[in-house]
Length: 140
Ligand SMILES: [Zn+2]
Ligand SMILES: [Zn+2]
Image (tube, rainbow, N blue to C red):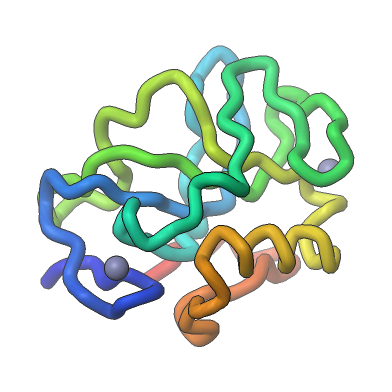
């Protein structure tokens, strides 16, 4: 079983460039936060990369520009290679994140707009669950 692209619903094959959206805790100096909630995968070509502002550490929220502190929960997006099917996390992610948003900005109009633009307005909403309170359960 392969991951499906949230835009075209096609399979994302191992080794293909992928954009992953997730919620996790940021533990510096680790580049990528943990991934307790996996929100969705897209073929890299099926997201509009021009809306992202790739950044290295220290990270700043894409909405309010606050610096992201250690152990803070963030909504984040990374581009990497789709791993073999038994793994979730993209490989070869590099040293940047495409998108970081602090918890207080989740659910704002700005983040919805940004995600809509990023996914060219054709996001399959049923695949993209906006952050819920509590939880911490696995994304699938
Ligand atoms: Zn696709
Ligand atoms: Zn923020």
